[in-house]
Amino acid sequence: MARRLLRALLAYPSRSPFTFGFVCLLLLTRLWILYGLPAEQSAAVLAHVSTNLDNLADHPVSALLGSACFLAGSLTEVTSLGFASTVLTFGLGVCWLLARAERRWGGLRALAVFLGGHVGATLLTAGVIVVGVRQGWYGEEVRSTLDYGISYGSQTVLAASTAALPRRARPWWALLVLAWPLGGAEWGSGPLPDFTTVGHLCAALLGFALLLVRPEVRFRSAAAIAEG
Image 1 (cartoon, helix red, strand yellow):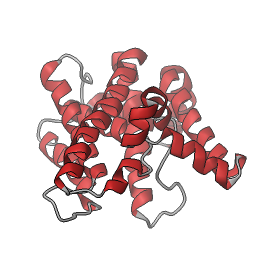
Image 2 (tube, one colour):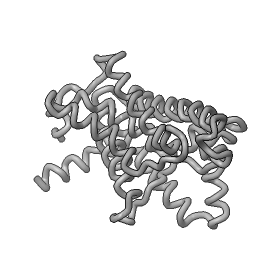
Image 3 (cartoon, helix red, strand yellow):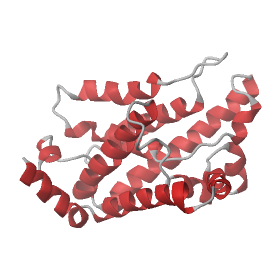
Image 4 (cartoon, rainbow, N blue to C red):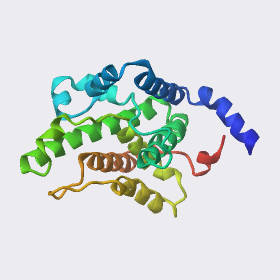
């Protein structure tokens, strides 16, 4: 088992070069933000790439692309919800399942799924926020709230990987993908949870929709998850 895991790790860069490069980028930007910049500059960088309404109106491209280059969850606080979120979105969604998607679909298709989920869910959520602010469900401060990270794109990959599982496991996996964002959801005075929960649900629905619209875009088999 240990030898098999070691072989898989050694082959990872060559078998999934896009995902490997993306993982390295995320770890490097994490170190840069935490240790390479003064606190004020780090805050300014994250504020610039945040995909809130103000930034989407002012510099949408750099906000949408930049936000996907940073990890938002915790990598060290193992008892926190932030760490659990990182395990799901970074560990499972990117390091494992995005790599599997790259091997089955190719790097460009895997990138399209991830970015499509990231951008699509962000824009759908922005529309929900606009309506929510007008209806008084969200406060005006939500327009400038800090919001960045890979979780929407990863959530789409998690949902799209449902077809790789055995048929009996698919409903349970789909339920997990839809349910985990609700675990930390915050509810205000309106009918909607906090906007990040809305975003994760939108991202999941985009991943499921991909399987319905393009059923051929799926992993080959459940066994493919375990191999190499």
